[in-house]
Image (tube, rainbow, N blue to C red; front, side, top):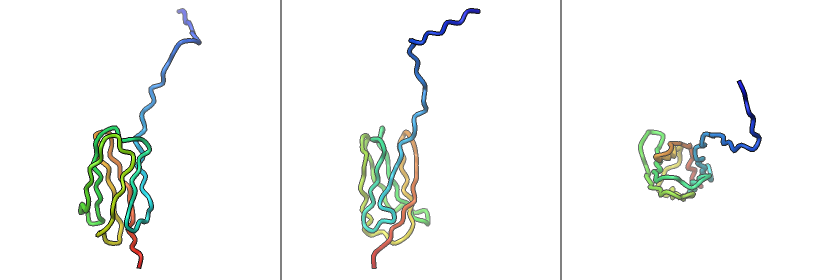
Length: 102
């Protein structure tokens, strides 16, 4: 058996691509929530806001290439909500709180 090691050979490591991170701020929020992504979306998607009773209270379409989306929270009651992001590449969810000033 004969093994040759070529230090000049080009090699690649097949790293698994990390899913796009979704950030939401501020949390808690009062009248506006910003949804941001570490990388531009690689496909169209949907943002869904779900209340603690499982009802969908908002749906917003996202376009490929978007990296940030503001959401108006007007008309939403104080409480806990879940923000779901659905694209062809991945699905992620975050919890946020709507807190009204009195």
